[in-house]
Length: 375
Image 1 (cartoon, one colour):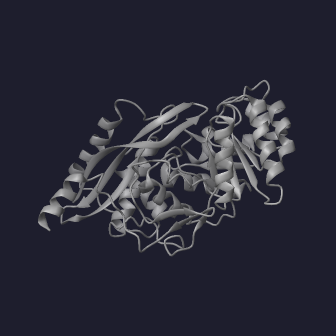
Image 2 (tube, helix red, strand yellow):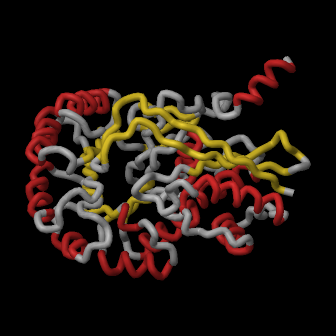
Image 3 (cartoon, helix red, strand yellow):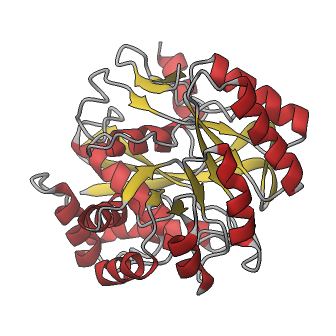
């Protein structure tokens, strides 16, 4: 019989993180631990980390919801999927056990814990070339802040070997943001740096196209979610923008395959950006990828401020597919109390080092004390 427990953990930023939605100093994730009562020492671990303002399930009742799901594992005698067609079996698992797939961060946590347990509880979610030492190309994220702070981050990222830089825009004076872009293009014209922009919906619909036209001169690869999701103007922006549009928040709360195909057919973006925590877990992202591929829409996968537990799962999931684009998986170093792991970001690549071990003593301190006592 499968058993489950919930473990909240507060992740603390190692710097003053700022987005267009405001500053962040910490983030709470809830970790779902699954094990078979016949082998309690072997467990799968999944991260449920909803984001305030984006996740439907965020709020005071979230922990209660997780505990109810953990109780379901005990009461309903859930069985592990067989593992022949993982995506189909995971969908069936949620359907048979009446777990709401609309709670994306919960779905992601359950999927990760299940797959981890199926693979022996070693934090191997998918066995593929990533876990066999083939790294994933990633972008370097530049956080919002003062002009000097942003320029310093850019210097460090490019010095460290990143060839794709992602900048948040819309939270500062627009002219200052243009100054940053101009600085990159003038100083690093020889390096062929790819620039991605993320507006997080911060542009006003009335002048979004004007701003995008102003940004064209900086040879921008794409701009993510220029206006808030759900607005009819997005269709015109996707059609007329001189810079390829990438949708992110626009995809949240779209759950059925028919709805996904309808949205992509209507808006016709050049790219979509997928976060398992926000876009229906692995199953939901798999549906988005297949729908995008049918319409020749590009895509990449990013983290949503998860710890190394979630980041590891997302990187392994991304490596299940073929994509030549940079993924947004360089967030492993943003927390001062993240879990030591085999993941390392280096020279614009995310590596998995099988010889390095996971250290989860801060998540399970009681077990660490018991182990120390026994030894």
